[in-house]
Image 1 (cartoon, rainbow, N blue to C red):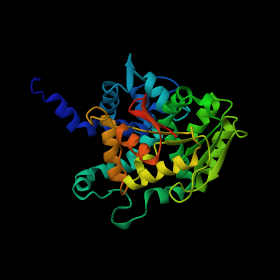
Image 2: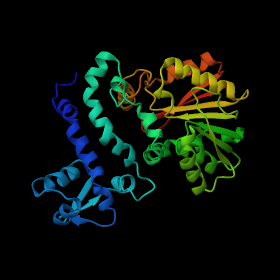
Image 3: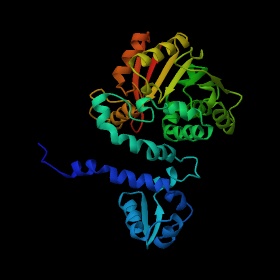
Length: 336
């Protein structure tokens, strides 16, 4: 039996200290500033506008947390922060963390209320405007959000483009496509595939710009529509990346049924999210993401592979499987 240990309790209980330190560093563009060259305390203090009382502790805390390196008094990025937190690089994933800093950090302070009431705690609490409705009404914020979604999804998207047996199919639709990285990665890795990005009309300019930048405009097109209200595009493979967890149980089942109706016999549905392990005790990120859905949506929740395979079987899929992708993400595949 494990001996009682206070360390993990304190690390998690006060984990918001480390979280907010990193989020503030991203907000102040520390990692972007250091991407070109290492700098000493005085230079960083001036360039970032840090008060002398806190500057050294702040930067050294980032060193201790593993986000910066310090050699001979000069601070520099680690390989990970240089790749993923420099705003000038296409691999930047800080957009989603910027949103966490602006919004989620505050709303998660109401988690206890959410757990007791089952009600969301974001901008829509008490009848305020829906976050996604407000987001889609602001082109600049929408573009930033879509780019952020690409940043956290590219790794899994590339694995899907190489691991799934695309040689057996010719067409694919990325439902809830955002910037379009999933269908872009599939098309880049599989030159015989033509694809559709399916999302609300407001997404079209950002999607088309991203597709054009990858030289895929002749094979990848945009189709406007709401996956909750209309039919899905008729293709060989329907894909839903970080989509299904946003919706309640009946909406999840409806989307799976719509995918089944959209594909021919032998066609496939690929769903991926931070799939919770069937024993619900290992994928902490997936379970915390489900709590985030409680904060952010009226009925959304994350789910196990067994849950999703069950919805696919109910819809008529004859074969289902779960395959791990990267980090907390796994895909569930259904064959009609």
